Length: 376
Ligand code: OGA
Ligand code: MN
Image (cartoon, helix red, strand yellow):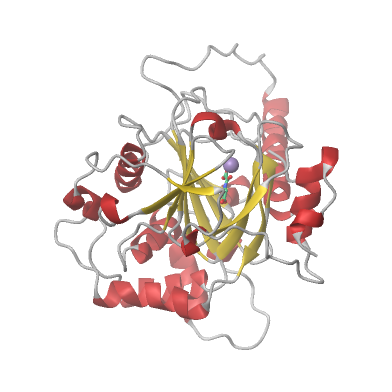
């Protein structure tokens, strides 16, 4: 039974989400759009890019192919949605994968583990996980490494999962390499002057999902939201402005980039399922960095160390990484004044703080791991 036969109406999005999330029996994927196969349906149209916005050497600095070679698509009925089928240079993805696993989880960035562990315990997530992830499995059930327990990291303006807001006083610099990548993608898509101000990284295991939501916490919606995917593939559902609008299902493969701009910037979306990428494909991409990719003036050039390569390869064999980059404010815009919280006693303050953090963690886990309640 294909998804097109799923009951529509008010619960269309929820029903299609459940359809693709189902484990047994596995769903029929025949209605899933696969942009890597090109213009396979009349709903898919070529996207117009600004070929002069990014020079070939600038693109290479971010690990991207020349813009003229990108395979970029739009989807009828989704104005402002652009799907770029893996525009990365062969062998540059491992650099981004390592950044997501080794560099971006480091302080001062914030991650889910901070919610219930002390700063000293989350100081070196990578270092504490290397041994477990690089040694061959003993066959016994081993405790999960910190890296395997990582679910999200926030960058730049740190998203507050409780209040669903960003704020002026919780901000750290967004990594320069990710800013460069984002500026180039957005410029090529017709958005010069994009400023990457906030990032949310999602770490998916094979049974993770992301519930139906819309990203509207950014104060400015005139700038695009960018999404980068690495590792295992996923089914992405893109709906409309109303929660019940029937979504279109599409694959997101390693290296794929999505740009949500214009009307699509505020469309509901979700990730009901992670799907295995062909093993050869993951291996080929990881191998690429050992052999072909090394560009001297590239920010992302140079091979990974043997240890980094082994850990990244092992991790990515069963996981998916997604990075979303957002512009929160346009020039001249500022966060609304928030009234200062009422003064509390020390005891209630400490208790309240702990509660909020625990709650934030629960909410976030629900958001990432289950269907019914995983809403933002
Ligand atoms: C998000 C999001 C999609 C994905 O983080 O807001 O929608 O592909 N991510 O993981
Ligand atoms: Mn989203």
